[in-house]
Image (cartoon, rainbow, N blue to C red; front, side):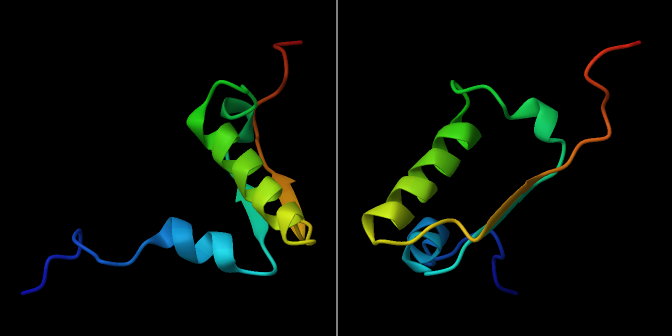
Length: 70
């Protein structure tokens, strides 16, 4: 039986080498804090694309949580 948690695959490296990237954030109301690692990783991905003369193909944030209780 193989260990599905162990891998020699560097997913971050693969994602940073693609030419077209789409980001879908579920529960996006949790990630709009510039101090969070997820937010910083998205910025890093976008910056990496721009360094190669590319742009993010699509970025969609989804949430079902209202901004306020009213």
